[in-house]
Image (cartoon, rainbow, N blue to C red; front, side):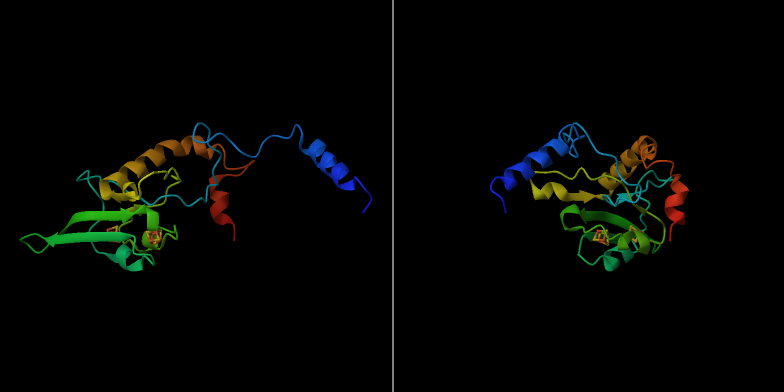
Length: 163
Ligand code: SF4
Ligand code: SF4
């Protein structure tokens, strides 16, 4: 290899990338566009009648989860019907496979694009059903702006129609 060829290569690369738009952004002040199929934090739908969790406490999500993320504690009313005492979700253990969402028979669990999971204390990653409702509703409010950024000329339906 001729003497100085490495320097020339370096200079050539530098000239090629100079003026190129940076691939990084100043998070959290700026956030990059998110793919429509991005898998974010699991959210919870609010029950339209009670205003609380849509969850009926069947425990199927808890069983379907491969990583022991979810815990559902339930009790029985006097008439034998079940109610949810506590729904806990450890975000720090979640691998975003969405098996829980697929398992839920009442569509209580919902996908979101929320990835703002930063914390300096892992205990902050243990959230309850009410927090999951807030995450879902906040994500829904952001979707309109996001949908303008799903890619050149792509309608949302096209994402699902792909094989
Ligand atoms: S997305 Fe996967 S890992 Fe996360 S809670 Fe649901 S089933 Fe468990
Ligand atoms: S599968 Fe759905 S309804 Fe059943 S416990 Fe989980 S979130 Fe609740």
